Amino acid sequence: MRRPNDVGGLAAGPIGQHGHEPEPWERLLTALVSTVGPSKARITSIDEFRRAREDLEPGFYNSLTYFKLWTQGFINLLEEKSVLTRTEVEVRAAEIRDRLKRTA
Image (cartoon, one colour):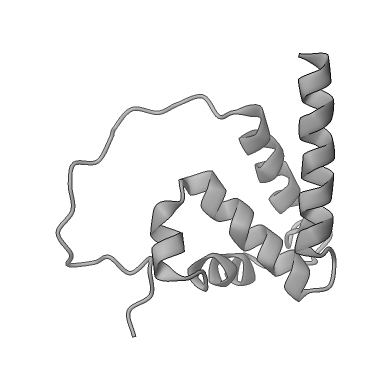
């Protein structure tokens, strides 16, 4: 079975070669993933994190940007390991969004 990230040999369009400055939430996500990873808290491994992203439904996987893909895989992995539930993450994210809207 071909996984959603297995695109070898498939037709593809042009690849953008321009970088971009990461958004603050993307930087935070990178820090969080690193913090729970093998070099810090050792809650997750690189292979588990990759598998959690690759386990997403192909249509969903292909609809996400790079960091949104990371977000969904990370939430799934934290839930799988009983660290946080998706609901806990969503509630906290809503609280942060509301606070940012009030201060903007």
